Amino acid sequence: MLQMSVPVVSLLALIFIIIISCIMPLNIGAMSLGLALVVGHYIGGLKVADILKSYPTNILIMLAGTTYLFSLAQVNGTLEKIVKYTLKGVKGNAAILPIIFFLLAFVLSSMGPGQITIAALMAPMAMLLAEEAGISPLLMAIVVGNGGQAGAMSPIAPAGVIAAGLTQKMGLTGVSGILWLNQFLGHFIVSILAYIIYGGLKLWKVKEPGQRQSLVDMQVEPFTRNQLITLVAILIFIIGALFFKMDVGLGGFLIGTVLALFKIADEGKAIKQMPWGTILFVTGVTVLVDLMSKIGGMDLFASIIARFSTPLTLTLVTGFLAALISAYASTIGVILPAFIPMAPMLLQKVGAPATDLIPLLSTIVVCGFLTDLSPLSTTGAIFYANAGEKTNKQKLFRDMLIWGLSMSVVGAVVSWLAFTVLRLP
Image 1 (cartoon, rainbow, N blue to C red):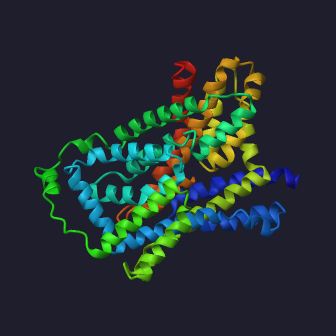
Image 2: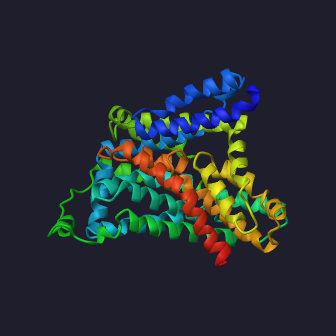
């Protein structure tokens, strides 16, 4: 009887920390680690060593390495000047910044490094620009994050490669391009909605006379020698990640250490400025979510919702389920490997036609990624971790969580209408 209740307890534990995160300013990463001990060891009977294997060392290194490098760039004033020159370059029109970042993130992600690498590269600059230009940090996180995810199904990107391999095992060939296009369409539509809802249109209006002109006329001192060296270092970092498959976390430490060795920036100040609390939050929650997968919490969650599928609503329900689980679990590591191979079987069980396979696959892919701007997912966590000092982080966490969860409904409906009803593209 106790074994039967373990998945239920793990699901309740996740619900508990989500509620706590919304009402109390506590670090739920620490709380998640504590609950993992109770649920996994004392109730589930797992060894502590097995629980600790779930600790995401790769995410820790990625977040710490990138924030280390960009913290060095911030303490020596490099990022501040980049922001000011960028604002002057767009003639003070902050409204086009989210658009530019979306397109840039899409192009870079499509080149192969994947959405998480692009998030790690672009989040520090994007979130700092948002703060300085008066753009909603939530809007910037959503639009830039979606831009990176829009390119994630490129045939040469990690997610695209995984999806291609899974579909080939099913006997499908030549679907990579369709999935990539549908991924772009889904994220583009949702980003337009976010741009409208979270104040993008208002940015086109000048609230105060001369406000935009003051940004254009803003005096910015030239880059110093140390700042120019830092710029070159960041450029090397980006090129290494994009074209030479350099690990962004270890690469950030490597390049940042060189800057620190030659006293290009104050390492002590940079380390103090790094978002250690956020890093604990992200990695701690990941342990609890992975534990849920091991002891059946996710399976229980999926089976409860899957009971409501019919031939007419299969893509809608499957998209909702994939999106909801993806808000807490890895899209590449959980959603794609679990749902793509299951697609033909789902069609057969509910009696849906074989022509619904591509729409169903597109829905799984798009919905699996749309909720990744939840702060409980890696991409969302990266943007959350890079929020500016003036940002109310508790409010941003709550807003990103609400956005991520809402995408389980909105994304499913948009995907169902686009791919099943309208048969796009």
